[in-house]
Length: 251
Image (cartoon, rainbow, N blue to C red; front, side, top):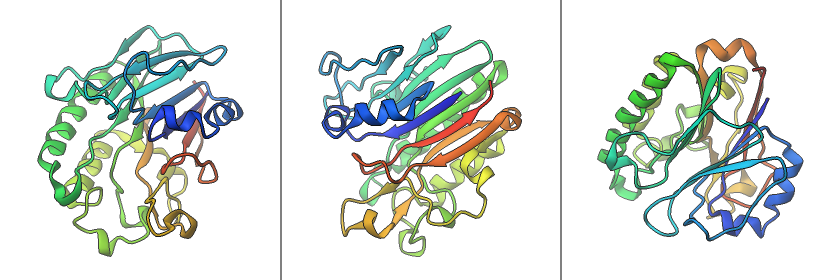
C-alpha cells in the first residue's frame, strides 16, 4: 500500500496549481492532506475510486485535515477526545482491520513561541491518544509535526535553536514519542541523508537554495517496520511551501 502526506497550505489554492494531476500521478491508496483551510461546502473535489474524510476547524480559513482513500474504513474519528484540541480540525483517524491511520497537523508554536505552552499540552494529550490506539492495533501516523527532530533535519540548526519548530521542548516531545515504540520511517531508512527537507520558507529563495526543514513525517508502530518497503520525500513537487512525503508498506 502507498501512503502520501502533504501540507497543501490551502486546498482551494493548490487545486489551481495542478493538485489533481499530482494526486493522480502519485496513485496512492491513502492521500493525507493538512492545512486545508476549508469550511464544509467550500470546495467540490472528488476523485474516482476514493472517499474523502475531512476534519474542519471552527475558525474559517484555518488549519484542517483530510484523507482521500480507496479503502473503506471501519470507523472514522476527527477528534482526540480532549475538547480544547478538537476545534481546529487537526486529526483524521481511520480504523482498518489491522491498523489505524492517523493524519495530524500539529499546532505551530508561533513567533516568539507564543503558543509553546499550548503545544506542550497538545503533545502530551496526542501521545496519550496514539498510545491508546496502539494498544489495540498498529498505528501509521503522518502529517506536519511542526518540528525538526535533530540537527540533520534542518539546514541551519545553530541559528534556529529557540525558533518555533526547533526548541528543546518540541524536539524532546518527538524523542518521547519515538521512545514509546514508534519509528520515524524516513530516518530509519535514510539515517545519514542530509539536505532532505519537506518545508521551505517563502523568503529568500529558500527552496531554490534548499534551505529547508524536515517537519513532515510518517511515523509507525515498531512492529510495522518489517513491512516497510520505502520512505521518501518528493521535493520536486511544488504548489505549497511543503512537499509531499510518502511510504510504501505491505499490509
